Image 1 (tube, rainbow, N blue to C red):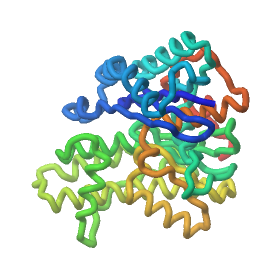
Image 2 (cartoon, rainbow, N blue to C red):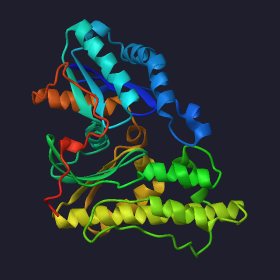
Image 3 (tube, one colour):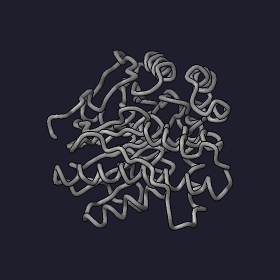
Length: 343
């Protein structure tokens, strides 16, 4: 089967062509530079970018895959969660193409697709096996899920305010580092050489909660640097302290979820999963708790069409077809379920 995957949930216009579990092409066009002066994604700019570039990105993906558009057999498209305008462009384009080609279309949950990126085959890596705990960390999402099978991804915890990637962007803006904040803070944090860190607040919320809150630590950074000179060493100190505090909370809650449900496998996805420090810290925690750890690799951590196409192909084989009745769901949760009965 030849599947076209379309991903437009935020500021990347991403399209991929896959065939029977193999990636033939995976093209991404990002509007990140257009948002840099604002310190975050501007929805209107993002949606206009998608309108301008989606046709060209699809053509480029088809050309690179050496696939004629008439050879497509399935279209998979992200329909939520994400920015409404951005999602609407991708879904509308996918529906029109599905209608013109008379081929089925399937809507894909963006969060689930990030987890499914770990199932993309390559000769160097084993596949995770269900059940497992899934962790999605990105600019728009911070979610812990209990994943029992391909059709059962249940959310255990989510962010109450800022997503982890959003918190990185805001702290980077406070420090005058620019946008996007994640890669910049990671880079600055590497230069930290002192032993004593800043004691920033770690928010765990109510007892046994798997939810997150990062607005408090952002405010703490804002007040800490007030009236201080932002030297290179000082910025490195703040960046490292902030990054460590945020990652400590994420890892503690995720490992606790593994213990609670007696799960021995952890699968991670999302743009922040490309952070080397997070990768090393969470791998060490998994090793210490005898938990198998899976990460899709940096290129597949970021928003991409391949993860959408692959999940679409897998769901199609299970007859999970929505056809043209796909509607944009900006606040879509995994499996449309906010699962709290497990706690």
